[in-house]
Image (cartoon, rainbow, N blue to C red; front, side, top):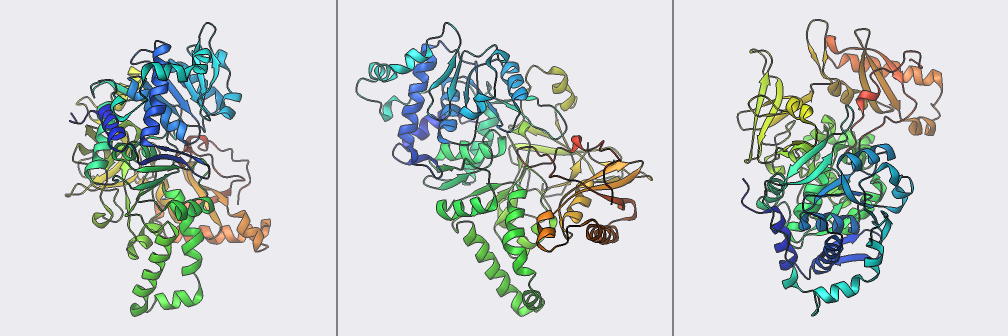
Length: 561
């Protein structure tokens, strides 16, 4: 059991960092110090008390990253209630289901999301609050929330007649073994399950971040991954708030243009991201530079290449704010070409591995200890093993146990028993290997692996990565059809248009050449029979993984190339 009490981490932090900047909404004139956040939490606690909210009751939050999202989350856990963060990409039916299934009694939501929800489909809700200004948007018949909010200043004066001060920060005493968060996953294989994370699971992640000094007092972070997802939440928000870091919240879609401007202004001390974001920056900023004829020639000369790589590294670091100690990439597989290039130029990046069920961290190594193609080293508070199906095969499912592993799925004993082995290890569903130093190497998902005609293991993700590096291909999916591999491809239509190549004849020529080059670079059993153009971008989860299960039964009648 982790020694540090999860809730007390924040009680101590608000006291110790009282005058430091805490949360800021990017591009808006809204900012809170740690002391001001503590006072906002106190106001919500008075409201919860007025409503006779009990410890262990659920409060759901859905909306873009902003200061009020963070305040609502902190107020919930420090009161002793269970927080239910919901990804804002979920459609209204999913939100209705999650709010009802979790038995949430309060909902904090953005006004635009609330406009599309139906309160009669969420029977347990007693009150709904705006993430713009925390006002009550809806209350159940018989509730007096709105009336209380009108007189909240009087209630604060009555509770704190000398004004709210650092000595008034006192939160509930709740042991780390209690469930404090329900995280409904948006997995790539179907409908969500409510992951029950305890104070111990959350403290395991946060204290790891503190112990390894990922973030420190006075550091700055730019929070652009959705906070309702375990990865961004654990480090950009929970670890940051526990140590006195200043969190700037980017409530916009993180396009490369918006991100680079925000990095320049915020100058973060640490960058937490997913591969797609960093790969887009590489494609837009670095690739055009290294593909110039003169540059290719210069890079072929040993004396010059180190100088040029140093210049490229500096250009990239400066573009990302210039002050970060490292970039941690997780949430999905990294493009090997981008990874190799970053490693070659000594760029300070590392790749970690985790899952919502571990809140999320399983493995990590600092950038100067990172082993290329790995996903970091197993944490000292976790254990991992490879469950091999065949004695002569090193590859198998990665299974884990330890401080970060969830308590189970909420109200779903069947799914809980399926995901744990008989001897208590969590099945990750990922296939890989572990070296003698504890580094994890992931090959792919067990659910997506295709068995070749002669029993070979085919990992579609590996073929897709090679395909995505070929001209005019933005993204791809390898699926099996009639015992053959077929590639669904979303082409770079913008680039094709700019060169006047977007017509059926040219597209066929380009994709035929891509197919030939792909098949020359893979094993015989991995060869792709045809490329099928897909008209739109593939649908993705909020952590930018393609929802593969939607495309496994694509009709053959669609346009083939």
